[in-house]
Image (cartoon, rainbow, N blue to C red):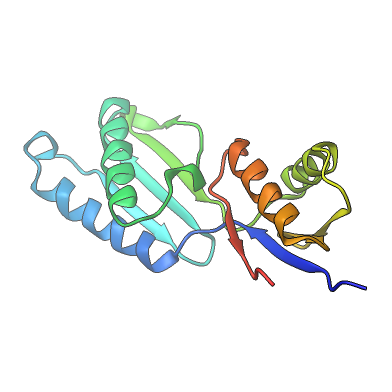
Length: 166
């Protein structure tokens, strides 16, 4: 009887790196010529995993988002894990946006991933949803490697991390 091997599929961002990227973005906006005389701000709520952007108008808000994306990608945070909200136009034309950070695999995506793996034709592979992560189990390590390659090839609109390989 062979021992089963497994690995976990998760997603998430390093909140300290996000905090650093938001601080760098704020410093860049404070020194850029096209933002002189404006009141454009970033606000990072660590507990909620949300970045709030506030700008004078919609054009500057788009520039803020571009700066934030650049700083996040330079710090090694995947922009795939950003969940950009709708642009809200407030009084006097001020524009606001809330950017959520994906910190776990939601149930719908987990079910879709589980179904894709089961429909992928892998023999004796079990997938279980454990909260905000998936555990894939099989007797063959080669099959697990094939499942990893299969899942990497699919686009689930988030960066996936594979860990706990045993």
